[in-house]
Each structure stands twice: as structure tokens, then as C-alpha cells.
Image (cartoon, rainbow, N blue to C red):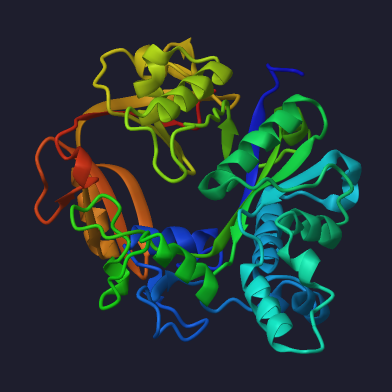
Length: 421
């Protein structure tokens, strides 16, 4: 095992209740759009909980032929669609790759639970004991990965892990280990679920785990609210392309992020409740820091560092106010003479600012005026309007504090040009 092997993410794909791809999902979340509504996949009227996060508008035949779509479960359909997006973003040309060196760990905690419900209902009500021959391959939680392998002809390691709510995260950690062990050059990793059916919801209702805020579904999921009355079942899929940094660089792949560490633990305390002193979470974080080779004393700076890559400039944002550029860029190479090295590219530091973050949605004309007056650290188009985030000591007229839980926190921002020699 090569513990020093660097792992990077080069592609992402998503199917969610607020979008049928990554961009749609991101835009909906930024706009504050809820994906929770009254259940439409079946009539929920006799259940106490009648809301869920359903994926709307998904057409499996947009991603696979009709015959395959009929034979596999909805969660497996999601996994193929998300994988297509992730592969496209990564620029991976499978025709030029050794497919025996491409692994797949796209997992599901539940599998095709609606198929279980349907087939068991038919089996116990029909004297002929009728049951579909596709029941077992559809119900198996490993068939998200299995169907991806079949669809794209991947002959490397392929399986799924099943660990309840941690399934997707465990899949990413497992992918990292596979790459460090040298068992593959590329791993498709993620999680997929589509278990919204009457039996599944009633199982959680019996545990008194679900929200019954049926009169306002979009406000039912409120995990940190004092009036929280349970969580909300949802469906969707997320897939990432992970590969060794050497493989990614050889094919000039877009490097979106680097996966530097992972930690996995078990509280061994209760079937649903976490240990009251948080020991399992703390141990997982410590393990992740250790595998990443990071000093725990550096953890705050690491978590609060954001690198925004624009076409002409790089913005490094930290919740620590610092005076020294080298301290702000502690996870980058400082070249001296006002230059830093990021992802192998020399960048010239042009400015460093301190202040609070403020947000406003404006027209393009207003955006131009604001940009000439304030330090804009983020600008994004949203439905014909422009979302601006600026750095300022006091709130500019019409701006709101963001994020709300950091309204009293000051930030240090370093701005660097991509055009450094």
C-alpha cells in the first residue's frame, strides 16, 4: 500500500430532488429551493408522514435503452445517469483506458425496496406464487455498481458497501483505499437510493423518526430547528470519478479537488442514537486528519480555507485574520516575491483584504457598479440575475449577512492572478 499516493476527483454527477445534474442541484440549493413535497410515487393518504424528497422529471430512457430501464431498479437507473455526467466532466475516454484498471464502488444502503414491496405483495396474494425473475438482481444493493460496470464495460473491482446513512461516504473512503493499494487507477464512487414506497415509509413512521409536517412539506426538513419533528426520506444519487494524481495529470484531466484523508468509526452505543459525548465523531475526524498527515492543531484553518478558481484570478478565503501571506496559504507552496504555487501553477498575489461577507442578488448593471466600489469575492448568474458576495467591514446598502451562522466572523481574503510568470 502506498500511503503517500495522492488521490484527486476529476468528475462529478448528481441526480437529486432539486436537480437532474450537478449544476441544477447546485443552483437550486443556492436559491434556497426545497426538494420536499407531498409523495407522488404512491398514494400516501393513509400514512402519518406524507412527504418526501422525490426526484421529479427523471426519464431513464434518456440515459439507457428501454429494455435495460425496465429490468433494473430506479436506484440503479440513477447511478447510471449520474455516472454518465461524472465521466463526461472528467473527460475520461474509456476507449483509450485499460478498463480492468477502472473500479466501481457505487453503493446503496437499501437497494430496490419498492421491488421487494411489490413482489412480496404479489407472492402472498397469488396462489400461483408468481414472482419476477429480476427480483434478486434488482433488490441486491451491489447492483448500482454492477449495472454501471455492465453499462460501461468496466472489468475492474466492482461492489457496493451498505452502511445506512454513511454508505456514500464509506464508498468514497473505500475508493481511496483501493487507489492507495494500487488495485486500480480510477474508481467510480458514490451512493444511490430510491426507496420511497409505502412499506419503507411506514417502517420509519413506526420508529417515530419521520416529520409529519404534511401541511408545509418544503419546511419539513429542519434538522437544527427547535421545532424539528423528524427527518424526511429522499432519493437521489451522487457519483465521483477518483483517480491517482499521476493518471489524472497524464491525461490532462480537470482536477476538481484532492481527497487527502478519511476516517471511519463506530460508536457501538445504540442502534439509532449517537454516543452522547460525540466520541465516535471525534475519533473519525482524528483518523481523517491522521490519514491526511495533518496536525490536529491545523484543523480549523484547513476546514475554513476556500479556493475559488476563476478564469483570471484565484481567491483564497479563511476565517482566520492573518498578516502573513505564507500563513494564509499554509497548504500551498509560497514561492516568495508575492507568488504562490497552487496545483502546479505559479500565481501572483495582487491583494489581501479583511472583512465580513455580504450577499445580494442584483441586475447586471447594478453588479458592475458594485464591483467598482467593493471587493467582490464571488459572482454567479442565477435566473438572469447576478448573485454577488462582497467583503466589507459594514453591510453595504441592501446586502444581507451570509452565511447567517458566521455573521460575526471576519475573513481574510487573498487575491492572486493566474498570469504570474
